[in-house]
Length: 117
Image (tube, rainbow, N blue to C red; front, side, top):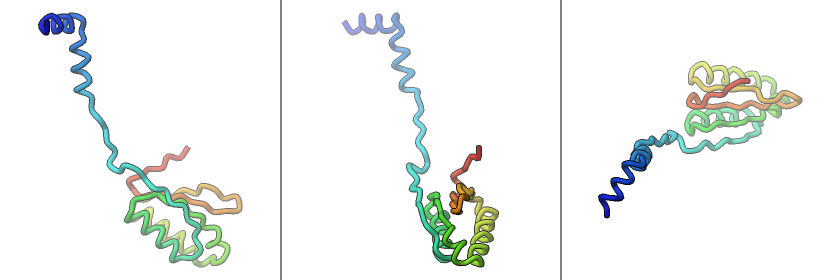
């Protein structure tokens, strides 16, 4: 009986479909998920902590730096210089998301690429 079933499967092409399923490859991402952190930055220490999190934990951070700009323009300028150094030295990315009264940026590690459209 098994011979008859094998013969029918072979003639109907059912064996080929079963073989194709075994040949499929499964792609597994290197990093299973990303935690996107949202932060309001009040001072330069919080900004440094946020950049450290991007480098160490490899998670993107969305930062609202409006308070820093309003309360301490000198620290805001220094934060911009640190952000530029982060982009140049570590390969991370940063994009201004919104500037309607608020400065909101997203900062990502080098492993995550942002696409501008």
